[in-house]
Amino acid sequence: MLFNLSQKKLVFASLFSAIILILITWLVKISPALQSFDDYALAFFAQGRCPFSNAFFLAITYLGNTEFLVSFSFFLSIVFYFYKKLPYYIIFIGTIIGSSAFVYILKDIVERARPSLIAPVYQETSLSFPSGHAALSVIFYGMLAYFFARNTKIKQVQQNLLAGWIFLFVFIGYSRLHLGVHFVSDVIAGYATGFFWLSLGILLFEQLISEELPWWKRCLNKLKQR
Image (cartoon, rainbow, N blue to C red; front, side):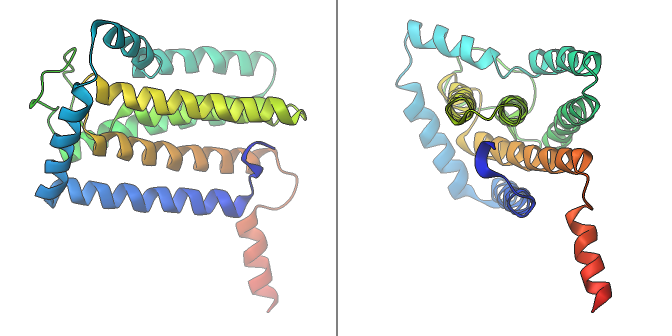
């Protein structure tokens, strides 16, 4: 199966992602050194701009656009429902909606303004931290790759799905930096958010389709037997 997943790995991934997100959020609020790094990195990425690269990364960044992915998620959920893939339907739409709401709530809590030191290629009006594009690209394309991978036994197809997923979320995250609409810490926090919700979504999906007791119930039963 894709990533050679297990429940323990998924729990570890979700906890590790949550810790990274909490740490970066805390540093953004209190650390002038992180802001200095973000400003330096912003100027560095801006040096690579040209009309062709700007047009290319504008197209790439659209693949992580919140409105596009949420709308596409509803369409895919209808497809899952039509083919009687109820667990797919529940987890996919629930994860996308839940993570989108989480991103917007965190933006309002942190209240970080968009980069202004270097003029962006285009203007964004929402708050900056974390990057919704980075978060949703990890979740949306990761969930699709996982669903397709668990429905094929061809290892090369699974590897291609994994590579395609990594390519998409890395390029979408980079596009936000190239276009000057996010800081590096925004994108990293977006990735951490994405991996947290992706791990949680896959863990819940495995519980929905599993005929065995959930891992946490098995642990409780073992404790009761002692």
